[in-house]
Length: 167
Image (cartoon, rainbow, N blue to C red; front, top):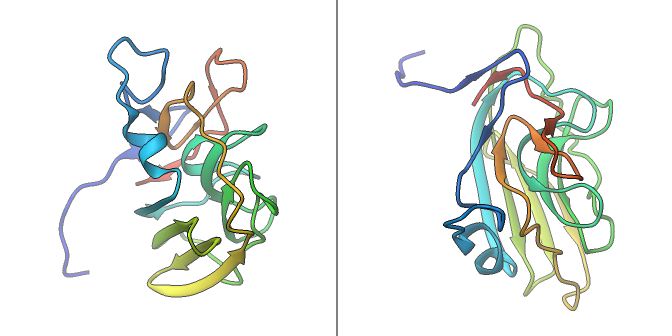
């Protein structure tokens, strides 16, 4: 209330991929890979709740590569998944974000290799931190696109785990 703007409404098996964010693109840009290996923040607003283990935003995040900010299993909470390090799914937030009717929530996931921490904030409130050994390195997903509201399949034959809601 009191704010105006626009959002991306996703429904019916629709997601958004960012072109030039995967090696398979002719004009690939390394923006979402090597430059973020040691530290990055992903932040967004979402209204709605994904299915089990499905992402709001991700770059890979399944198998052994990439990351996802997604639903923690079948629980009504979020998690910040990162592959290539211990405790890849990072446990879940203690903050319930599965509201009915759906309301807007702000998510911010922060990775800092120097401190070995992966931190999640929900609605501006500290949710939890996952501590890892500083020698561990996130496994990058060079062949996956940065996607909003979906996840690229492991065999690169399309997309899955669609989110129905607004970003």
